[in-house]
Length: 101
Image (cartoon, rainbow, N blue to C red; front, side, top):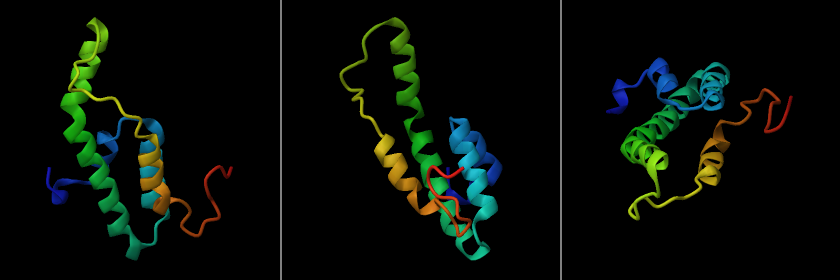
C-alpha cells in the first residue's frame, strides 16, 4: 500500500494490539502540527511492515495449530526493535515519558 493511501483510521485498523492503537492516537493528538507528518510516516512504515509480514504470520498461526513451524519461518523477538522505533514518539513536551502515569 502506498503512503498516500494511509489514513489515521486505516493505520489504527492495521495495528494488531490495543496498546499500539492507543499510542497512535496519543501521538496524533499530542504531536505539534509541524511534526505530525514525520510521526505519521513512522506509523505508516510500521503498518506497511506488518502488512508485508501478514502472510508469514498467518502461516505461523495455521502451523501452530497443527505442528512445528516450517524451517523457513525464522522466529525472532522484535520487541526491542518496536520499542526503539517508538522512542521518538514518546513525550511531546507533555511531561509524559515512558512509565509515567
